[in-house]
Structure formats: structure tokens, C-alpha cells
Image 1 (spheres, rainbow, N blue to C red):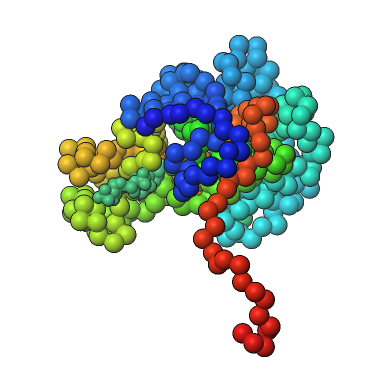
Image 2: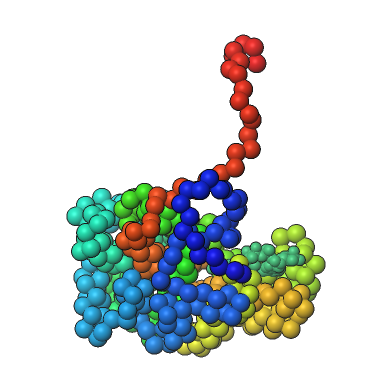
Length: 402
Ligand code: ACO
């Protein structure tokens, strides 16, 4: 729990720190987390205030530029992003060439990486205007690509963007609308998705963000760096927990919906039985994002007139956990993923889309962190050391003599 801020030059001293649990790789002004107190702030603003008042692109601007935009700055930024949501026609063809059952995160990272080949004018890492162009292009086209990932997985035609609609509203239309038919998403759904994207927008030096920074530290371009972040996020230990929550709730329902019996098995540490969506490496208190998502789950289900038994089971599990010594003594609280899967399911997303939605939300954070890294005079190419534990020197043995 003690932070010692030193900037060591190469002293010959090497520490082994698996998982970098005690190693800060950088100084950062972007996101502050106090896991014991359950605090998360972007650029100093508490997450609950941003979730209540801000729009996703407003938060993206804040993370990337360090200040909340003025009304004029926000509308210019939103307009610019909106104008770039169209992708090149050849890119649409490219998106259509993946097999239908392709892993959506593999499609997404390939697509974002491929964007750099379509926009070579946006690749100068050290020209601020070009970096801003790449930022806008990525935010705009990731939205289009995420909706295309959903549609290609269903074999559905890809729709063009509608510039007159907002970022989230048009994402929903491009994802769910039937071609040539009117589509008006429920405002509660639009707001809830906007809020979920805000809640996922940054979380300091997690696995995918550290990946983005370390790839970028070799001066790989922004597209290559964030595509690497998507690959890091695709792992089930990072981005896949909300899908696992849904699977767990489904299983409890299929077994008669007995939450108490399931918790007995969790506490007995039966092989493979964990309360998914609970616990966090950093938060040892209620994840501030989870409280917001829980409220939103109720609002969305009510607005859509859905009554999902899985939400009742989830609430029952939480209720048991919050008063049970096993969970209380280990400081296990719901994390952001406990209720998000239920909301995405109610909105009509299949579980395989949950992690791409996480990536869509995290994009501003990855970009902000890459930009901070590339302009930080302290940045050096990421190059951890190791402790060699292999053979000592051996002499060559002729092939026939081995
Ligand atoms: N259910 C039951 N017991 C748990 C859980 C859980 N979800 N999480 C931790 N524990 C127990 C462990 O068994 C261990 O018990 P012990 O002291 O008796 O051995 C103790 O709590 C500490 O657990 P660790 O695994 O050491 O905690 P760590 O910080 O390494 O793990 C993690 C954090 C991976 C998130 C873990 O809590 C977990 O597996 N949770 C479920 C998966 C999940 O929800 N992941 C999403 C994380 S948030 C995100 O990525 C956006």
C-alpha cells in the first residue's frame, strides 16, 4: 500500500514482480483509483458525476484533452467524429470476408489494425494535428466496426451511418435496424448504453492499457497499439467476466434458481465454482461502477417491459454475499461486470458482443494513455528484465551423439 515514487536509471538492481503488482510503469494524470475506498475519478471528476451528467464523447474529450469541453468544443468534436463514421467501401468488403462464426474480438482487432492502411495520412506520431486526426478516425470508425462485427456475425447487411443522430443512438440503429425500416431506440436504452461506455472508458494501467502503452513505446502507430489492446482485452481474465456472469446465472436458473445452494458451493470452493462478477484486484470495496450499473439494469428492464428472472437471482446473490462472512472478510463486492451482461442481453446483444462493447467504451482511455505516453519525456521503450533460471553454459553435442 506504500507508493514510492522513484525514477531509477539502470542501476543493475532487478526486482522480480510477476503481474507487476508492485511496479508502476509510468506517471499518469488521467485516472485515479482508490480501491480501498471504492473511488474512481477521470481527470479528477468522480465517476458517478460523469455517469450522471456527461455524454460518452464528452468523457472521451475529457480523458484525451484533460479538460471538460466547452459547449462549442463538444459540438465541434462530436460533429467531427460523426463526419468520420463512414468507412471506405473497400473496408466494408473487407469486413464481409470474415467467417460468420469468427471470434468478434479477432475481427475487431484486425479491423482496427487494418484502418491504418486506409488512412496513411494519419500516421505521424509526433505531429499533434495528425494524432488528433487519428484519434477522431479511431473513435468514429470503431463505432461503425463494432456494429459491423455484430451484423457480420448474423450474416446481416451492413448499414451506413446517419450523421443526424448522436454517437450512441446511431450505433444502436446501425446494429439493430432492419434495412429500409424506421428505427427509433428507446431513450432509456440510449442513455444506459452511453453510461456503460462512460463507465468502461478508462481504468488506469490494467492489462490492455499497459499493452497499448508498451506497444506504443516502440513507436508503433496508434492503430497498431489500440489493436493490441483489443487483443489483450479478448482474454477471459480481462474482458470476458460479464459473459461468465450470465452463464453462471443461467446455470443457477436451470438448477431451480436456488441462490443459497449456489453460494454454499462457492464458499466450499467446489472446483470451477466462483461467484463471477465479484471481487477485484484493486477494489476492496463496492466497485463504484457496479452501483451505477445495478440502477441502470432495473431502468432498462422496466423501459423494455422485460422481467428477467436472472436479475432477481443476481440481486439475491448480492444480498447473500453482502451479509456473509466469507465475502465480507475477503472484501469481495460486485464489480462492474456483475450487472452489465443483463443489460446488454436485454438490449438484444448476444454474449459474444459483450467484450467488443467493452472495447468500444475503453477506446478513449487507450487513446488518452497512448497520447500521454508518446508525449511524456520520461517514456522509454518498454523492456522488462528477467531472472534467468535456465541451464548454465553447455558445449555443443553432435547430432548423432545426443
Ligand atoms: N468468488 C468466490 N471467492 C472468491 C472470488 C469470487 N468471485 N474472488 C476471490 N475469491 C476468494 C479467493 O478464493 C481467495 O480466497 P482464499 O483467501 O480463501 O484463498 C480470496 O478471495 C482472494 O482471491 P484472489 O483470487 O487472490 O484475488 P485476486 O485479486 O487475485 O482476484 C479476481 C481478483 C480475479 C477478479 C477474482 O476476484 C475473481 O476471480 N472474480 C471473479 C471473476 C470476475 O468477476 N472478474 C472480473 C474482474 S473486473 C474486470 O476485469 C473488469
